[in-house]
Amino acid sequence: MLKVEGLKKMYGRMAALDGLCMHVREGALYGFVGPNGAGKTTTIKILTGLLLPDEGTVTVDGMDAMKEPGKVMEKIGYVPDFFGVYDNLKVWEYMELFSACGGLYGLKARRRSGDLLEQVGLGEKAQYYVDGLSRGMKQRLCLARALIHNPPILVMDEPTSGLDPGTRYEFKEILKELREQGKTVVISSHILSELAEVCTDIGIVEQGKMVVEGSIDDILDQINVRSPLLITVCRNKEQALNLLRSHPYVETITIRQNDIMVGFTGEQEDEAMLLKQLIDAGVMVGGFVRERGNLESVFLQIINHEEGMVLISES
Amino acid sequence: MKVNPIYWQETRVSSRSFRLPLIIFLCNTILALAALLNMYSMVTQAKATAEIQYSSFLNLYVLVACIEFVMILVIVPALTSGSISGERERQTLNLLLTTRMTPADIVIGKLMASLSTMILLIVSSFPVLALVFIYGGVTVKDIVLLLIAFVSTAVLSGSVGICCSSVFKKSTIATVVSYCVMVALVLGTMALGKASGASGSSFLAWPLLMNPAVPFSAAMEEQLGNVWRITVLESWAGSSFRRFTAGDWLWISLMAQLLFAVFCLHMAIRRVNPRRKRRWRY
Image (cartoon, rainbow over all chains, first blue to last red; front, side):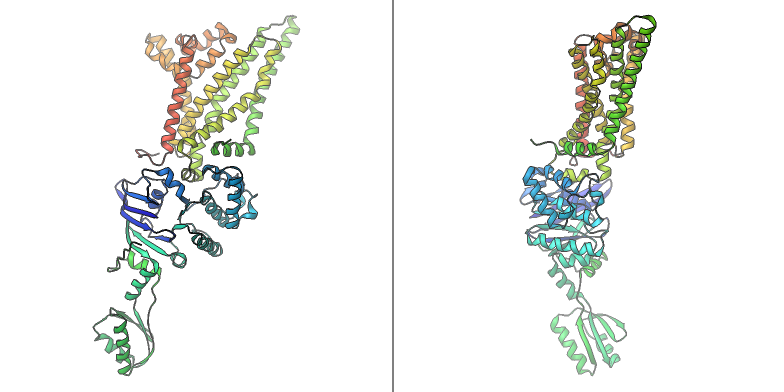
């Protein structure tokens, strides 16, 4: 649906994007993650036609965004990290303005605006002035505005920054609804726990390059293999430590009270074998589990430059 | 009918704000005061001398037209110089650019909105201008010519304002620079015209073609009379000024100003376009 290849962008001597590649499949809810200054906003601005890249291609639904920017714009709705509202317009007038900007006029525009305002929960606020809306409502209004021309792709840059947990929850629910409607959503955010809940795919960008990209399950499975084993020992801790120190698959051992965290490179069968060895050695094992990885741990591993975590899957 | 959405939005917002009625009220108050004072002085003179000077009513027309011309020069840049920079400050420009609207649509919509405000102002001042019809001396052709001069001045100063607004990010800087450009176009070219008369070089007189006072002066030719024009304008701009207000030069001057306005709008469209290669920033 959305394909970015070898995107490069320089700001003076600084490379904001250094050959970034990105593949978003149709219907995906794609989390675009990276530390500050990684190039997320620059990428989003290029995707939405607000910036020209120095090199690279952007293809949207088979169309080259550089050659057919007008047609591509019709396929993309953009929600920026700021509100971008006219305070002296009423909510319905704001929607009508952007309907007209998107080529929708008259009754058709009014119906579409009404439906979208209902969808984002602002149906009753249509007659209110925009400056009378709360922060969360303004952001929802921006979302409704971005959807006014019914684009198949929605690009959102930090849409939930500065919103309270309640509004963030509502926003998440709207995202899920959009996904059910078949929209492809690219969402850049720093709130990784939220992305993990709603996203199907993620792409982690650092220093202008895509370092990890793929479906969220694949990436979490990959991180699980490298996550430490958490062994809770009730009795004979010293014996357990002696056994672990001599084990060929054990790389690191960290002790936290009764728990021992083991950096274990073996597979599932090796884990089972280790458990058996511990029991045979008379160690009373209260718990034996590999810690479940999450998006935060993936992100931290990537930005801390840990090796062996490169998973690029074209889906 | 499909109206430019930017024009629609601007006119809706300006009609809702307090600024537009205030501008109309102040401008017409100034014009009405000038006209009434002029009439009062005529009546007083008639009472004292038992003689009515009909040329005084023409002076009334000239006075009102001149005040209106100066007001256009002052108000239009103020209306337009915050148009694009204001959108940037509100962070709405990028949103507009991600829609079907082209940079040209946005710039033209902004210009149309400020011109419609100006036309409203001109039309609202007609009753004051029409005072002169009671006594005669001004034909419909004169009024039409005056309107053309007003509109061309509004287009020129509006285009300069929008161009500055697109080049500079802050509305304050854009306003200051657009006023500087207008001063250069009106007074600067007059100074060059005078220098041309003094040095005998006709080359320096050519920029006078860009002066919005030239078509205005030509439109007022009948009413201004030679005395006013020669003593005042020629003392400012030298004898070259008279040359450009006569015959085809007037239309050439109008064309030159229109071309300059188109150039300014083209610059503004280029600056607004996010897909152009950036060379410099402010």
